[in-house]
Length: 81
Image (tube, rainbow, N blue to C red; front, side, top):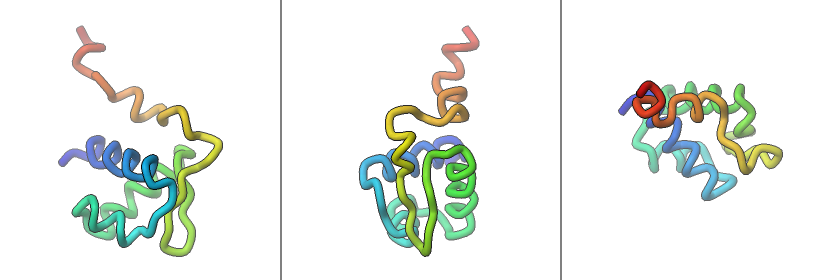
């Protein structure tokens, strides 16, 4: 699984649940703790989520729009054409 697809999967799960334990997210994505931590740090830096004490929260100010990184890489082949 590529980093982009993994991040998109994590984002979709968090958007559905809005708040969840990081351990639960690890089990749902079949990712290691360190891989998931890197992805969550990335999403947090881009303002999509917040992390606190073993939980991850959807950032309420950004509920309707995807991050720039995810939008930039969606449909990459179609954009090249």
